[in-house]
Length: 128
Image (tube, rainbow, N blue to C red; front, top):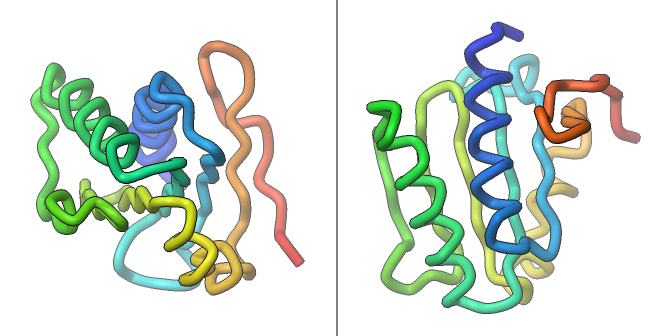
């Protein structure tokens, strides 16, 4: 995986963690789809929190001149998608996250673990 995908994922995870996600997971999907390198799946406890997470991601990345190529679901806020090209962010309200089970759908993806305050990748592990 290229460094820019890792670094972009790191920044997105930082923004999401500021808004106290129920769960956040980064998946290396390069070998599974040509759409992107990384999926970030964040689960929020309610729709206000999904919007707050999306706002935080957009604001943080806009400071560095990065804007989503595509954005959808913000008004209903049960599933917000932010497409940054090499990283696609899924922010789901808890009930919808359970219903759609994105982590289950992408179970063959490698989990990217960011550690320490710098959130640099620790390891990539195959999920089973």
